[in-house]
Length: 174
Image 1: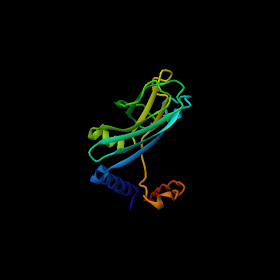
Image 2: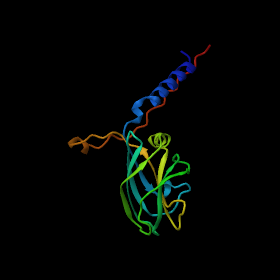
Image 3: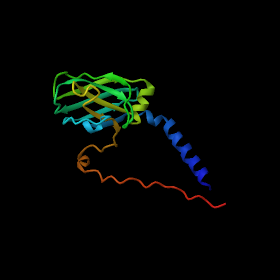
Image 4: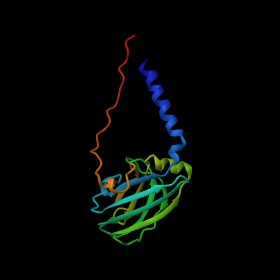
C-alpha cells in the first residue's frame, strides 16, 4: 500500500467518526483560569477553575470559581476560539462585578449547533475582565475531559500522561 492510500483511509475514518451521532452526546469540559492563558499573557495573580457540561441539545451548564484578582472583576464571558487565538463573545456570564473572588454555579447557555460543535472540539474559552485587563485578566480554555469512574475506584489516580507515538509510514520505492 502506498502512503497516499493509507493517509486517505485515515482521513475517511476520521470523517466518519466526526459525522457519527456519538459526537452529539453529553461532554464534560474543564479549564484552569490563569493570566498566562490570556492572549497576550497577563501578570494577574488570580487563578480559578471552570467546569462545564454540554448536553446533546446544545445546552451548556457552567460552574466557575476564581480568586486573587488585584482589582474587582468588570465582567466575564464565554468566547469562541482556539487556545492560541482570541475569538468572538458568545455570552456574558453572571458574575458579581467589583469582586476579587467569586463563583458561578449552574449558569445555562443555549448554543447554536455550530457553536456547540466548536465547544465540543475544545474551541471555546472563558475570560474574566478587570479595569487593568479589559481584554481579560485570566482565561480558561474549555477542553473535553476524560470519562471518569464513579464510586470507590474513582479515588485511584489516573496513570501519567504519555503522548501516543505518531505513526508515519515509510514511502515505498517505485
